Structures are given as structure tokens and as C-alpha cells.
Image 1 (cartoon, rainbow, N blue to C red):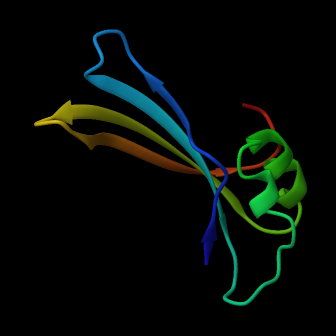
Image 2 (image 1 turned 180 degrees about the vertical axis):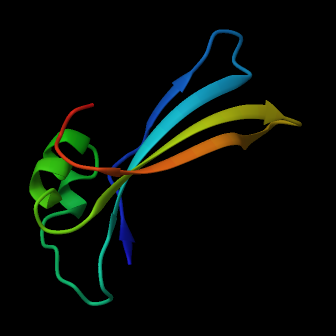
Length: 85
């Protein structure tokens, strides 16, 4: 299963490009992680809560708006430790 807090999104000047960062936690099916839903809008506290329980990943994306829809142009997934933003 994959869990994540609210992504961080920044629309760049001009409104046609954006960057996004999503922190991802991958756990075994059925693994109980109480309290994560309540921390969805607070990524820092979410990371502090789960950081030592499982492997974390950071997904960085560059997006572009085409025909009114956002499309991923680049994506980079890396292992992540700590709470450094």
C-alpha cells in the first residue's frame, strides 16, 4: 500500500508549468498506521510520524499544462530519510 501526505505544488510564473513534491510511504498490505489521515495536510508532522516505521521516498515532478490538463514532464524518485524539506 502507498500512503502520502498532501503534495507540495508550486505553479510557476505564467501558469503553464509547475513543480510538485510528494512524500511516499510504502508498506505491506494491512499494516496499521493509525493517525496518518489526520496528518494529511501537515506533511512535516506526517513525515515525523512515519519516518522511523518504514521506507520513505520523495517523488519530485515537473509538470506542464497542455490542452487544459496537467501532464508530468519529468519525475525523479529517491529514497528519503529525515524531515529535511
